[in-house]
Length: 449
Image 1: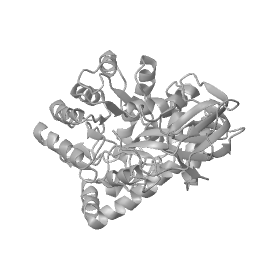
Image 2: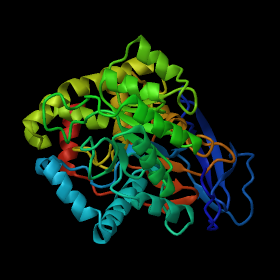
Image 3: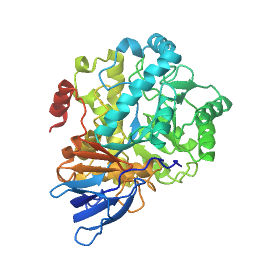
Image 4: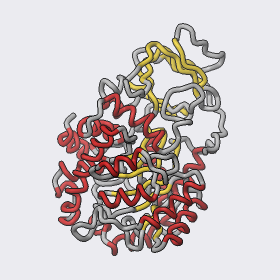
């Protein structure tokens, strides 16, 4: 699925660490050495007393520290840093003006630079794998290839390119390709795949942030037949499909079409639950959920003034957010795979906030801290289809690692400030990000520290 990185890495070992495995039960390995070879893979894991580090390897003493898998974020956008949006830019006129500015050579160069900056923020925050789910163009395809070739150190990226929508639908025209029929929908999917997309995203329903009339958020937009054409095209290329869906009817249509992940979601009933667990039209026979509570809860817990949202957007957010919270809890209880995706770039969803989604799963959706950390590593890797490569600390897997002060199972907030990030064997020394302290204070007050 991914080409190996070609650069040779200085091999190293993390010795005398406590390893937080990311297992659902919170299992740890005491006084353990993790050895990383020159190809950026984990070559050995074992007790420090008996694990032999080959000559010439750089040896790092991790006594008193915790080594964990890198975080995996399955729902990112990189066109913004996560500050509140300008409501004027969310109108159809505003979207068209922005699209005209950004869908040209100068605009594409600007979006590449913006996206690269945001991807580096994700990396420095401890995220070693991301899936994008709606880009202005193919800027992340370019960046993902540069990372995989070793020219740039960064997280593993599964780029989607623009999302796929109906004319004037959610995300259009700024971050979407538009279609009106199954044949046109298939063509848009092929366009993204031909440009190098390794994930696809459908706008199955309307959304909150660009809604203009009451009831638009969650209203079905794309037909089941259009979505099935996209899914068939993607699945023929071994690509999984995500769907923005924020109502029962929207989720039902998307699941019947064969989408592999539902983004945001809604309250579940027996029919939806069964389709998640056994979906004959999906690539893998089941579908997963990414509730993106990080994007929803600010609309419930912060003021309209802080969010800088219109009356219509606030009105539309109410039932949508309640459905996201309820659906996340129900999915967890039903054994549906629930992954971590933040919807970064949305209001109050900064690129460095992946750890918060785990906190919110713990506080609002019934996850234990161990289950939340499991979701943000091993589960999300499975949800987006890279669990054979990353998500856990195992021999042969990519060395996507964090060094932390504490075990995340004891305090998820320790993930906010990793001491060391390792992406495919490439160390990021003294990782740091620029935080929006005013936003962080408001989020801490809303969620509790």
